[in-house]
Image (cartoon, rainbow, N blue to C red; front, side, top):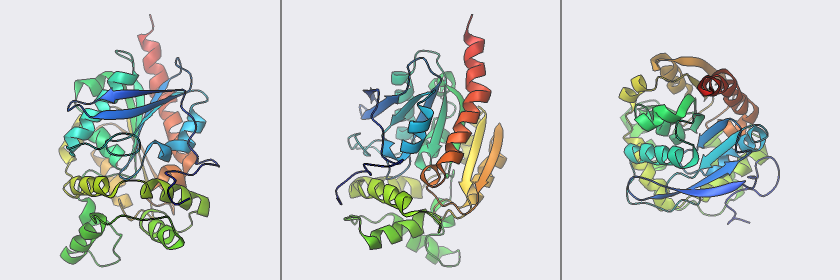
Length: 308
């Protein structure tokens, strides 16, 4: 049981993909991509966060695939995408545009949703011509553009150099997480989820996070520790909604507020009371509803305008 990479029953068990494909990134890295739903439906692209996988989006995929084409991919080194030598925000952007090019027709646009590092992926890719070609609107969930370690609240100390140093050591640990045990669930819930998170949601997150290889977890932690995408926000000109949890210890809600203030075309900030960092699992209806609203407002209109 401890070796499972995701739960296998209930709303957080990942549904089977309609089809799978491989996208090749700029440096040759190969990315596992899943497509759910009907081929002629409005397209949504989902980018998961650090230590997660496509399984993280199970609730969104299951609901949205009834009337959308949902494209989800594993970030390099996560899930079914092989580990790579390069770990950087440039690589994240390269990977996203590779997925867009592989899964969407030329000129076809989608709503992009990114959680945590997935949101940073969207920020990193903003301004690229491939991003502009394929993006109608975006959703940033539980993410930030800089200052992640200094602002994190995982270590319950007063802000300062000591807290930043200890937080960096904790998040950047090379130690394997080991099996999913009651203690492991308690630690993961404290660090990444709201205090009221139900056991099935904690279990779903724990299975996914514990499946991430420790070397991959460490490599990306170093990228996140030095993250500075503030300058990229000016290029994220598509309509963009922001979601944050008020009990998020990894990317406190101050990050969401800062993003909403800095984005050129922010179309809404939603603060989810009592929710932690894992908003797509902790508050699946809210996240799915935000994606639906973006497709209804921007994607359908965009695609209709393209129709002769």
